[in-house]
Image (tube, rainbow, N blue to C red):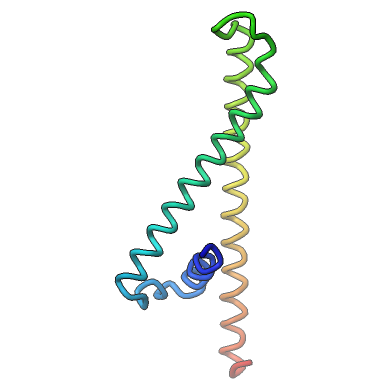
Length: 116
């Protein structure tokens, strides 16, 4: 199922009209699968954030609450993690845009030369 969703996403990137070619049921299924993947990715990111920051910052279990240094560490850790995640996402988007430009240029060159 994930491979099929990957195919749909890849096909829609190559052909912006791809989604319009799907039946309403297929469009609905595609949207539901994409929403599920986004939810899963969000939960995975949250889990990684908690694992990393809790493991790095919480050192004492002598009280129910965190002390000031643990709170400061957790806030700093979470901030860095989110900035890093955002930066990776931006770099990925830039890479995807470059790949699309190259594919368009290659397709344009193939069209200009008469095909394959």
